[in-house]
Amino acid sequence: MRIFIAVLLLASNMIIYSCSDVNGISEPDQERTIEWVIQNRTQDLVAVTAIFLNEDESKPWKHSSAIVLLDFYDTRNYKIITDSSMIAARPRFSREKRKLLYEDAYNGMYDIGDEFVLYDIKDENVQHLKIRGIQPVWDYDATGFFYTKEPSFGFQYIRYYHIADQHWETISGPEYPSETGSNIVAPYDLKGQDTLIVISNITEETGQPPGYYLMDFHGNYISRINNPYLQHIVIDGLIKKGVINPRWNANKDLFVYMEMDTTIVGTRISTTDMYGEYYKTYTSSLYYDYFPCWGPGGDYILFNRADDIKGTGIFYKLMIIDIRSGEVREFLKPGDIPGAIMYLYPDF
Image (cartoon, rainbow, N blue to C red; front, side, top):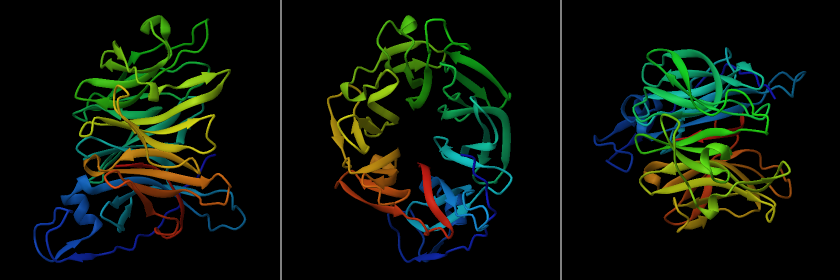
């Protein structure tokens, strides 16, 4: 469903801290506004897609979306960075959090994806890249990013976009579907400085079953990730066991992902290491939990909670897990940002 962006005014919130704390504030009586965080502590920022209620009662089905930057340590500090000129979603920070990519569905193309937009966090420069796709994965130095297209006509491939030269190249996968069926290879995350985490079903190239693989930046498969917890099994077009949106954390040497299978009703947020020697699930199957990402130091996980299995209408909250204690609690709920009725696709 296409959503239309509403222009919203931001009321700034100024929080006074009297001493140094976990937020990294060293001077006393520091005014911790969102602008201060943006200029001095970009590592504390969360990016999220917020969906706003349409105030036009004649068109209640048309909501608006915007990208919002939040202070992880005080969500009353926030800034809406997109306006009604685009339909913005799915933000993704570069490693040093100086740049942000997001997708603009207003300039999207069916069966390919939305247009990528590059945002400089400190100087607020917005650059429409004139390329379309989904699932961007930044390279280590933020000189470019990998991406794929919407899975249509039975094939996906990986491209790389060079920001300075403003051109793309195909890294891996077919540009056209094979005669034998669907060919899919898509990026999910970065491991180290020069290794991609991808999903692939191109057994002619891998010589192994479909699954998650390590790949170099030239499209060469390094190895299959032989982890039983990361099996993604699709039979006759139905997901029997799903591993959705795996995100790697180098500090913890762990994946976080959305887990689903036919033995549970809802979905849950789980973690595992590279080889399946460790596994832990943090949420029950009583809810539909989606889009996990790592928080500060790998000690936290942010994710969306959509509803419970009874359909009682929780809507899309933003939740947080403290992996040290296992506590799961609300991080951001509808209305915390005035007019926002749900939140999607968090990134930290």
